[in-house]
Length: 84
Image (cartoon, rainbow, N blue to C red; front, top):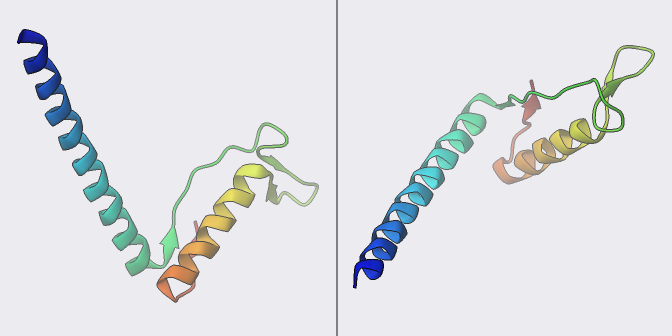
């Protein structure tokens, strides 16, 4: 009986945390859609994940992923989403 109560409370807690996370994600998507900008932080100190070329441009896997996400959001929102 005691363990059932703990599991029930744990389940309710986890459901509340999940609901809060979904609400936060929806707010973030609304901000991106309204501003037209996706603001991200990436590092440029470790190949192949992030580095600079001879011209100083940022390249790497993280940058490719960010560009892909911005492209997908542009398609979803029907407007250009810039990466900042």
